[in-house]
Image (cartoon, rainbow, N blue to C red; front, side):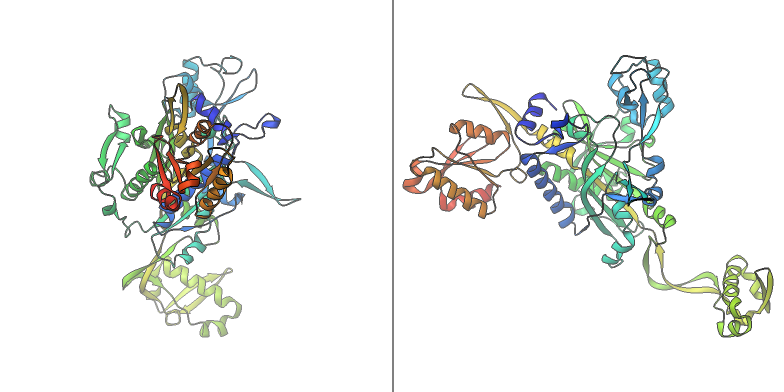
Length: 564
């Protein structure tokens, strides 16, 4: 981010490094009054589009979960970054970022550890801190999760969640009940996540505590299809894996064309379309935007296809959102590791008869004859029916329990080779759009920062959409005497009651007050002057054009509502 915008973000209360009184803590940021309001408005806009309009559910899961959750999800084994430690000054760096910063390679994250080590040696890279050579230093894995203890004494190990997704997946057995066991259904969550980044950088782009807005859509892969017809004419810029591997470039095409050409999986395509329209609505410059497909060598182990929404800021591409087709990986893992079923019952249109050998032993016969062993015998009969159904063609079958053999009349086993089924249990597949809220805010500020000159002075402004601006309207008295201050304060109060976010300001020259509001992106300023006392009108100034218009106070609410 440019230096002027970085300075503005701190001075005007958008965000700043946390714990500044103690020298600051790397990777942690505090959102000031303007930033907190902007963040809240962006999240509200996301909820409206991706939860309310799509008819999905929202939950709020804990940020700390026990170790078994992350053993099942694979995070304990695979959630690593590449780290290299300088042998002289003992400072640690993220090895792939070091390569990207010092060589022409743009995506070192997709390289193997061995390839990173070779690249560092071939380019004779040195420690950014002290200059010591790193050519012969090993690159190792560093797990990004923050570990904690749950409870005192011999407490259970736990972790701060590195993503909000697992809080959804682990609760699937309960959530499917709320969805009445009907697919597809979506569950969203907005909340904090934590990653112990090796080298946080670029302010709120790469931090150790951040906010995610994630949606997990559970689908039946054989039956459920997205409503592509709603978005088929939306045009998006696509940078395919094939294009990246050759001399290709970004291609603009409609979602309908992308699906027809099998360039994008259809569920992902649907979310690419609605996300593109949403990005534009919150102020992303779509001329500096693209969807980039993950190449085969960078796909996560759980994903069959992933596209990232990327934006250009200061000449660098930043990932805003990942759209991944996660398949059944997550639910299968939790099903294997837990005592719950992470499946859903798929009802057949009509009952079907299937080849499925089974027994239904007459316990009224087995019980009196074999006593406490009857249940075990029944279990062994069921296992035999599955492994050797032909054994039941004889008049009797023999099973072994506790080293002793038992011969049972076949008639008593009620053996059957077929079964009538009304449905089957399936493991749903998951489609995941995962938004990084902090990066969204960073991009919105960068893409809407403007500088121009007014009356010989530099004017800095944020051309934020009215729907997400921290403040809707600034209210000023031309001066505080002659009752103008009281009239302006009362007008500010009424506008707040009407639902607008309002800043009242009577400090300094009116031009300076305009500039202050321009810098925080306030779309409208209302000035109460002496003419207001005579005819009950006010001057409304629009931020981007600086055009001014007299508006009756009685019409002001509707005037602002129509323009926000």
